[in-house]
Image (cartoon, rainbow, N blue to C red):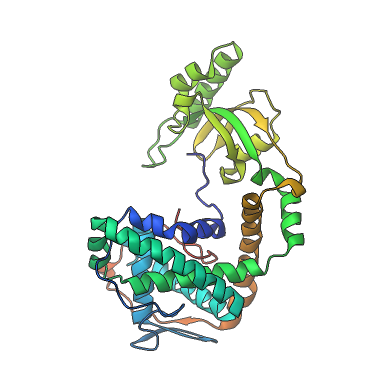
Length: 357
């Protein structure tokens, strides 16, 4: 419940691409082996109605439908809102940006992406043999192995291309600027919510939540254990039964107010209630480690690299995509077929290869 709702799309994307097969294994899928994928180009490119044109090419309706088919499997929560014209148009903008970036990738980028795609497809093909439910979902959505392979290839080529723009100096600079985002922090906390994150319904009025948070803090300072106080007050299902504990966690993944307290609050001191989008938190930082850049392991450096690559993607979307002179002509659905756009999520046009988490 502490994770931000607007986590870095690039970081989410990297996780998606690496774990895409695992995501699908818990969903459903296919049967007989389909034709091999064709690099980063979906079947249907160049066929049917053109729905987008840009300086470097165009997108046809059949190829975009195949892209959306895999997207639906990766993002089942968005399926119902694809009828919203604004949402679908933003997904098409994203698809075009990936096509442009893939076209700029070097042979080395493409080679690395192809090797990783082959590895993931082997896992996927193994998964569909072991998971009977997988067949029905992919068949129902008319998604083939080739579609999945093309989707993965496109995403991975973009990841490799953007990562190739990152220099060691940029990684070091990002780490030195935001080292707290990449080092483990151990905290205990009690959360009194103002709203239910799953339904949006009010749980406590803000003043009531703050009052309860202050009561929790007073009991802790009076000597009651975190186990006792967390079970009594906390509404964070991820930690209330563990004395509010999050051990060796990545503060960079938390919502801003909680992250700020985790990185700045004095170690060993129970701080005043901190307000976030979830409610009020009473926080104690138990341990905060900061490593020198030279001592970072490769996994941490990859996390830092992903953050820098995300900034490169933002720059591309802001400075380069407008030069593509993108024109979209999606067929307009009838008014009765369109859900209310105001009630639905909207994708960020600057997102990197699709959200997965």
